[in-house]
Length: 106
Image 1 (spheres, one colour):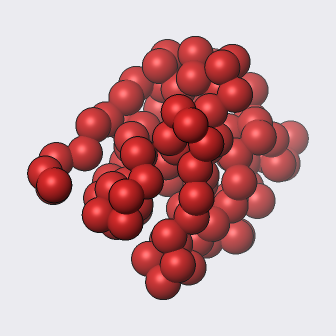
Image 2: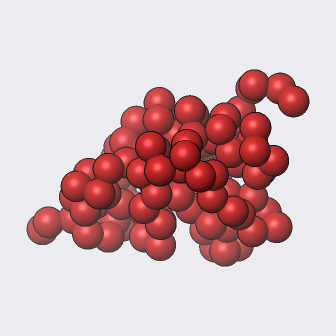
Image 3: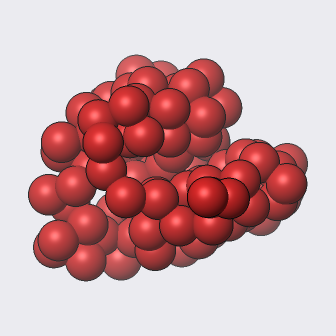
């Protein structure tokens, strides 16, 4: 299996969310609580590496703050047989695009 993981844009993530694709946020709980993609499930990277998560039929989209941790997580998921993509630019790019976040302190 290739170690190359596909990256998607926040626009592609938004479209995938509309289709019901599962989104994993691999940041620590304190970062996740500061604001995350609506509906994203928090599975910190260390936990995910210890026990890879499952995914739906369309796989899983993985997000972090900037895209580095999500790439690592997506590689681990792919190695365990889960179809995974990483969101380029992460939650920062999601916020910069003007999209809604959950958990952010107003």
